[in-house]
Each structure stands twice: as C-alpha cells, then as structure tokens.
Image 1 (cartoon, one colour):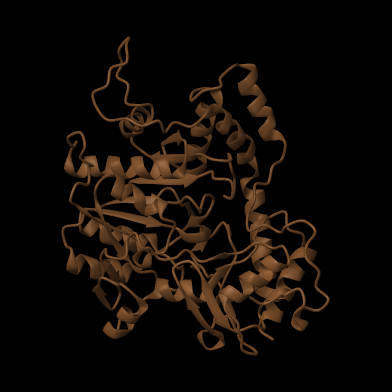
Image 2 (cartoon, rainbow, N blue to C red):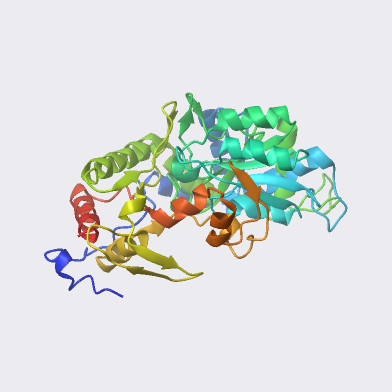
Length: 432
C-alpha cells in the first residue's frame, strides 16, 4: 500500500487535525429542546407528542396524507413491501410472507435495505440495471424485464444519493402492468421531480433519518401513503399487531418497529433546517464541480426537471483515465499510472490525510448474497455472475461500470471551504 504521507506527489499536504467526514449529523440545539420535552412529560416510549407532530409535519412537507414514524428506514421499507404484497396477493398464513414465491422488480445499485424487505416476505428480487443520467433504475431495462417476466406486480425503486430517478417513466410502465410501486426515498428527502417531492411517487414511500442523512434522528424512518386505513395498518403491525382488547390479543404477525419519542424529538428539532442543509450540500457539490473540472472525471448528474438534495457529491472517472485495478470480494489492488487514477487510490489517499470517502454502492446482482438472482439490462437479460459473464454475453452493465469507476467524496455540511480545497488538491495529485 502506498505511503501517501511520504509520496512526493502529496508534498506539502498535512493530515486534517479533525476527520473530514463523508456525512455526519449537523445539530442545531433545537433537538435538545424536544428531547427534554419528552423527558419532562415522561413520554420515554414509542408514543408521545414528538411522534404525533413529526408525522403531521412530514406528511405536510412531502405532500402525502399519511405518515407513520418507524424505528428505521429499513423497518419502513419492510412494512411497505409487506403491505404491498398483502394488497396484491392477500394475507398469508403464519410463516409465509406476503410475497411467497413472487418475483419483484427492484433497483440494482442501492443499499441492500432496499432489497432485504422483499426477502423478509419470501419474494424473489429481480434486479433492474441503472442508467447513466441519474444512476437510478433504467426504465428501458424495466420494460425489458416485463418482456421476460410479464406477471410481476411490484416494483421497488430507489432514488440514489439524493437524486430523483426517472420516476414518471417508471410509473407509466407500472400502470401499464397493474403494478404497485414502493418508493425508497431514504436518501432523497427534500429532493423534487417536476416540482413534486420524492416520497410522493410510490403507492407506499419511505424516507430515512439515519445518522448520515440530510436530517437525522440518529435513527428512524417514515412510511408515507395516502390511505388512512393503510397507515393505521402499518401502525398496528409496528406495535406487535395488538388488537383492540383489554388484554394482549394477537390475530396476525407483528413487529417492534415503532419510532421512539426521543428519536422523534431529534427529528422534530432537525426538520426546520432541511432547506439549510440542502443549500449547504449544494454549495459543496458546486465547489467540487468547479474545482475538479480540469480532471478526467464527471460529477453525478441529475435531470433538468429535478432538484436533488445533493446528499452526497460523487464522481465518475473517465474510462480512459482509469489505472489498472482489480477488486476482489473484500479488497482491491491497483497499479498507479501517471495522469490516471482509480476510486481505490483516491479513497486511500483521502483516508491517509484523515478524510472520509466511500465506494459507490456495489450493485446487488454482484453481491454474494444475491448474485444468482435474475438481472435485467436494457440490451438483454440474464443472471450476471461476474464481469466476464457480462462481457461474454454482450450486456452493458451500467451499475457495475459506475461501481468500478465511481466514488463518493466527503460531503459533510460542516466541512469548511478550506478543507474542501485540500480534498480537491488531494484528488488532483492522485492523477499525477
């Protein structure tokens, strides 16, 4: 491994005294007020004023009629997928998921929480490749998927890194096939498509308040929908499916998924600062775009009719500027060449100087857990088992290409301009 601190290319650069993070919580003080309020009123449980208020405020903010506060975005995704499955296929027997034996189309390049709920409900994920304009689900690949699997009735789609996908096109295809959409807007709270907030485009939608999100509760998530009966069903499931009886009466499977009133207090204090955080993230993105313009890389892009929340600033290295690199399951090697670099080198260099970065999400179809599942590209279909398989069959694997050439840069909204200038300088020096 290169010693970047003694490498002549990086002469004059000193490690940051305090780590420059990828994305960390940015607190303002109001959060403590509502946490204290919960303590003073002794609502130290999964009920209370903070929960009621953030459900109301976020429903209004996003533009949905109903919002249900849950313990995590993952919990919200699970229950959204479970509810969609029950709507489509009916209530299952105990021990069987609502998607038992059913295929589900889903985003390929995403965090695995987007997908895991399908498996919790005993469904089979079918991975749909990405497109280069937004890095999200490719509508052309989705149409190809319906040629192969015409009976699929559920689509789970994510908006990656805060950038809305081509959701109008995806919705049109879903409607043509009578399919429901679960929209994973965990990373894109505050982003808009045609002036409408993400979180409004799914039959059921999800946002996250994980510690690194645009606003945070340290944990927590929200399920969004328009039907009050559906929202109440989710609330019931999330509190162990207790029936309205004077004792603990259970008639269906339940979960301990309700949000804590303490976490809700943190979210309540964060919510007024959403637009401020987005503006700070946008400024970071614009500085990267200007500061890296002379390098053979491109920033993550978005559609002209959308406004991302700029959660993470990402780059994609040009193919002819990639040095030789090999990735195994857990480690990567590269051979540096002048005027070329790769994600591994840049991430190693940033880490050496005490700055944080991250590889792009590894696509699900090349994850060991899911690599035997169907994978659909815009120009073909198959079960992708390796890059060699893709090349041999002539498929264009957009997600794997973005994973190979892309990386997420430090995007913490507390990063100073001076710190970001040093990060930009480090990236420049990786290409020397």
